[in-house]
Length: 235
View (cartoon, rainbow, N blue to C red):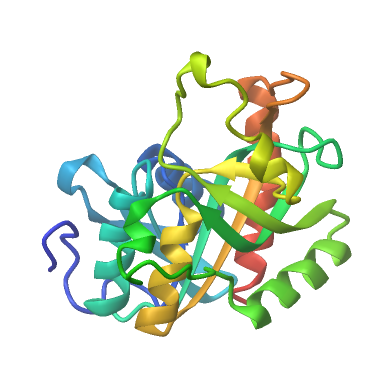
């Protein structure tokens, strides 16, 4: 048992899906895993372990934002020895080449978060995915007929910006950053330090240029495809 996770030794698999929303963790467990067992309810951040095609898989909620996300990732990797962590979440598109419903494979994760830069004494660390996982995800997506955009994303500390600041994403857009979310840079930074495999898969739920947004039903359908792709990496 760790501070924020109530699982006993052996209750968490070495392959983990990490959505932000604990109810999404519950949904994944109930709809994609066989015989799921809940191992955590501390702070309502649900975690489950079950079987996917005979392979033990765990799924754990991690909350919103890099600080919350890094707490769970740190404990999962350092205290429960999880070997592979895949974030499955949603994002907002920043560029015209990315469309609503697209699936983004985050090869790298830029960030405006001090939670990453504070470790490097003024230097700029580039948080990146595990190459082998990214390649396998791209290959599996093609086999599954899924449209995937691979590239750099932004992990921001801010969800609601001050409108008086104007378009705060324009500078990121100029450098080809595909979309914005709130966690991946923290995951990749800890993966580099704690030596586990990490990948972030994101579904585009809204577009910051066109102002399009998916309905709840449309989000669920797109989310399911992303989860299937993530789970294919456990096989």
